[in-house]
Length: 341
Picture 1 (cartoon, one colour):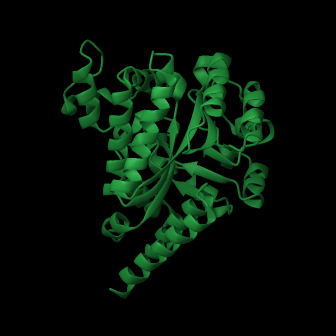
Picture 2: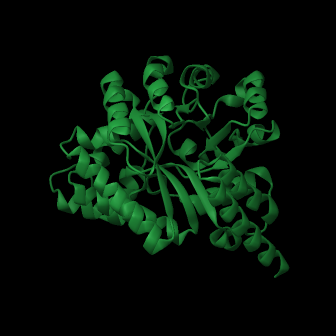
Picture 3: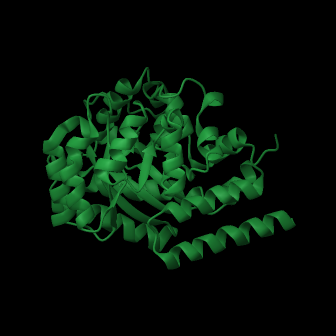
């Protein structure tokens, strides 16, 4: 298969499913570990590759939370957020909806107003200095239960930062039924936030139906099990509900056994809108450019097909109409220039 990496590297892109703490590069994780000695996380960037080797999804969550523990001050929050944007700029990511779990930081003692100020300061600086437009999805850490749901909703609605556009639900799915979070999603949606819960990553299609019917999901995080229910695929295709697909993540957490059996093919063949994302890129040894190359191979795409993936992400995003038009035009201009040689 042709090497599409050079084309992908320059392609303007949007990313819709990528986690704030999970995007901390080995350099930043090591810097934070050195700031806060005595933690489990190695302060050596080279040792992090082994540390970020997961046996299953539960092990991934355990390791993820040790990195969360490194975010202890507003200065840590600001550093992390801006450096994530810097890594995005290197990949020509023009727009990203970054999933943030404020409960994980405020419960560890970071002042909630200082937290909001830190992410907003990083957001405005990233757009001004790096050309990366960031928006926030505040998500409930499902493993922390209804206390976390109540607190996340309060933080989102009472301290709503300017960049906040959506409301999510992450963490483990097994043992964390989606319907219990309906009242919180109802409040968030009534306040104008979009609904983007994780569902069907490590559980079956029933979890996706719950996300749609109980939480009013407008996009689905992962949705890996969707092809097991043809009626669900038809529903997603008919209502243009995009799946935020993260191929390498699904292999790393053992949600999918092997890459060549990833269900992205069945999703796309059914006409479901598919977006390609990196999830927690440094933890999984990937980035968005790599995920585009993986998707191109799995779907048998050429440059025009890859560019369509980029357009589909823009269309599924919560960017304003003028912003969507500008970014789509940039994708088209880049692709046309590349193909003309």
